Length: 304
Image 1 (cartoon, rainbow, N blue to C red):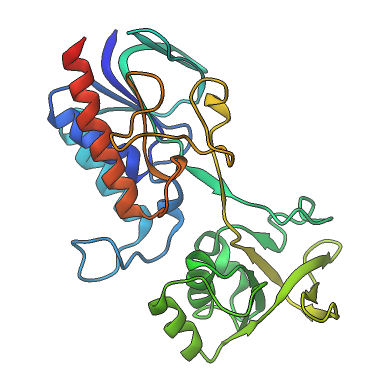
Image 2 (image 1 turned 180 degrees about the vertical axis):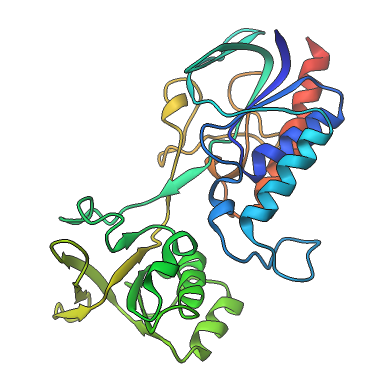
């Protein structure tokens, strides 16, 4: 079966692309190996996506996006893409169970959380170390936790965890936060959070679970131990671009490079969302990317 558009990845970028391509009467397939929504689905409350006067849960928004795309004819299949053949007019997408053909491919595989790279981190994952506050925060109700980072995600996580936990430490390597002013204002007023400035985490202690962490002040080199029951890591993301290495042009950080049409260096292959090299990675910018990618995918299909 020949598709007009195959979309790899079911986050907000992927589903926006699916909606726009399906509404353009293009035969559209979206492939997602896990669950719909990507990182959005792990976000507790989303307040900055237009159209919702009250905050919406990320998983609920993901379900709405998927249902809307399906309503207009998108076929959604849960299967892992293992290889891509992108050269030529007809593209081949291989999954663990099948092979698909398409005139265009839209890559929207997103990104995943960056790890700290400390000894014991892998051993204690899920036993005190988490990369998703909204997924695991309820396990630490009335306990002390630390959030590592200083950007939007870290501050959002700290504010969210403060509603569940006894005490939340926000550990940041600089003397000012990188988060938006609205988020900063919220955490500065939050009496259950404490910001540990100019500090990095250098050690994790605990046998069966996290018991404490060692933090180092980057200006004085002094180290202190902090007793916590959980660590939430929010120090950035890494693009899920392994699938397309040596297939499309990537940046030094391995994000996919596109033009303003979301097209890669290969005609008929587009990229959108967090996997793309760009300045701002938010749900609204991902959705915008997806709409643009679908619009120009339609133009490409019409030119074949």
